[in-house]
Image 1 (cartoon, helix red, strand yellow):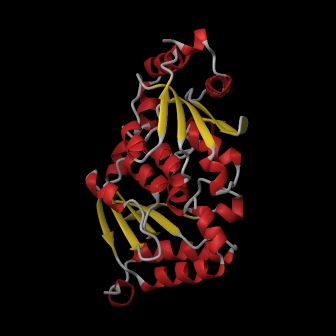
Image 2 (spheres, rainbow over the protein chains, first blue to last red):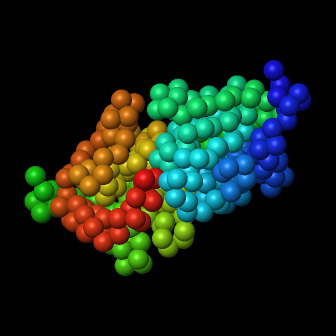
Length: 152
Length: 152
């Protein structure tokens, strides 16, 4: 089911807005927001191209922009990301004890969902067609950038 | 055996220098260097305090400062870090396919060494007394900063 049409999740929509911002900047269209008790406390998008960054994936950028938070805040937070989280972002989720992750899609890239689940993280995959289109189109046009981003 | 006395590794010494720099800046004393074909291509230290950063652990800072590299470079690189890598930094190692990690010590903190080994990463732990002293002293003086850094 395509949740983006039937029941748009406002936080996933915010993550998609971030992904689109990244695309407009010439970057890789992956966005993320960190939500605590119903409010966005950090938002971000992949900045490989824009800042020549090797570490600022969308999720990492959202975490960085959320600033230094206590373990209690992370434990109550939900991370939204347009794409299944790679090993680095999954590691950050484990480091900070984030217990809930909402993933836009995992068809163009399957991240470390199995590892996260094995450590008790709850993962919901929305299988969102907007997210798929953003990444599908980007990978088709810029396979070399995408491969660089995932260490291939 | 304390390698730092009998056979000092110049790259671990460079990572320790980074850790000391961080300490002088008022930060958490963890340092790292990325070495490719015998040359340091990125060096860094934990910047939680200095930049209010949630993502720039020592290893992440070294990777960031190494800039955007190809998968081929990462595969031939060795990551030196004064402390056993946390889940986030271990995830970055997996993302980029770094196959060799040299760890200063894992007594004050045991990171995801088992996960890394299970994915084929070679890990050498030097059990270095300088690294232990740096972290031991810091944790004793600033337990709250240290707990924040590892999501506790």
